[in-house]
Length: 286
Length: 324
View 1 (cartoon, each protein chain N blue to C red):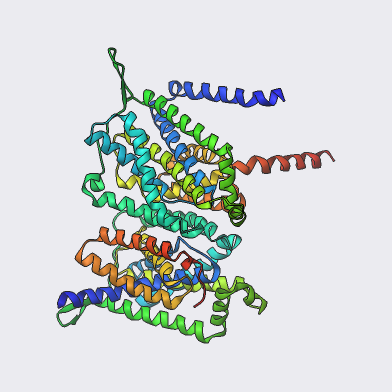
View 2: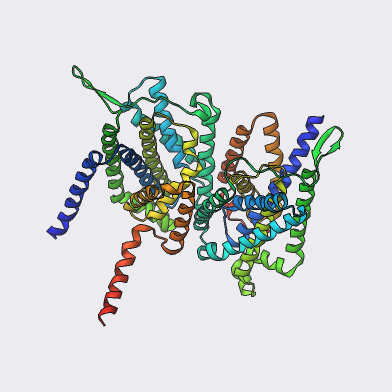
């Protein structure tokens, strides 16, 4: 019983983490056709912002997370403008150029803050919540609620505001949207800013749970790619649902078998889905 | 006319003389580097064959590893000679590649790119998980090739110098085959598939068969390059064939250019020389790789091979301007 409850909680936590990273990637992919393979590196940068400001400088944790969102979102907009924009429309080209970005960010972080031991970040609230003999660290509780809050806010923004609707219009049909006076440039920049801020937030919130190091972005990127392929590019509802499915699948395989098998299962699952519905990558709309 | 026809012959002769003289001039360290250079040239040219149909495969490095593992296992456990395991390991790679193609053929462009990564990674992870492949430690003590002449003696290719000529001979032979394929009609079809797929289909050409052919030929030669790597260093492990190596291969070919046969060779040569010059930079090297990739894609999308074609008109223009 305790094992089931523990697995359930681990599954929920992993799902919310996947959802934040994957929704960010899904948004930029859906709106601007940006298959950003450096997405995991932006997640890693989010964790570093918290380590620097909260861990070393003693800034308030919530302020550090907000700062991470702001900085990573801003960085995303700059990257979109100067590196991705010239190749817009060429999905494979953007993916390849983002590989260059991946190497640059990874080396810079490794050389500036060191490659050695992973950085530890203390959780803002120590201890754990006790649910029927199963302990769940407070940081995990914070992560789950923060993810639900941020994704909820994004949902309201996309559904209820004019700017949000404009982004969705660009995702559905960029030509028709531009005929209505919606600037593709603005939609792409906004999507990239929001998507990267969300990933930065995921990294920031995960930093007290996972060790902070320059290569921490690989796994989230792989998972995000799998999730958006399954959930449909730009389809945020599908992305969230797939994140939950995958979060539980991964937790269960890791708990009962081992992590290498879980990784093999994940990538083979992705190949299977790509083979069954290769159009999954071309699908648009929310 | 006669002069034009003579020129490539002279060029090739000079190149051959240089390649034969090289290991006698260079120090051991640079002979090592040149051997690795030959091996990666073969890999990059194979990789480029697939790009002619429009597919970018991240599975090529794991498939190179498959060749390396297959040959290492055959020579260690079955005691087979290098001359037998070399082609057999190439065939093993091609066979594994064929299985991978079953799902991959349904994918195009970005989906193929990501799908090939995923399936290549699954192959690589299986080496960690399955006992015979030696887990993280890989396989050590892979024998060096040798030739025994009956009644005389045994020539071993253990040293750097003999292995240099062995690699040179095998790589040149493979490149000649790949070059002839490139010059033949088949490659024109590959390129047509890339640019005008529906037209190609409408004249009754089976696109799928050409995609399979390109991928299979490339994978066979990737496997061969893996064999050459394994028997030179005597050691292989799963880490050597990870995503980073796959991305480096992508960068070599994209920066060198993949429109012509020479592009990937220029790319590997460029990065080999650059890698040596950047040695003091140590861990900063991938950053330079990233910068070069981004600059190339933004300002020289056809790669280094298109550089002369861009500079010559520019110089001429400036010359005219200078005179007036």
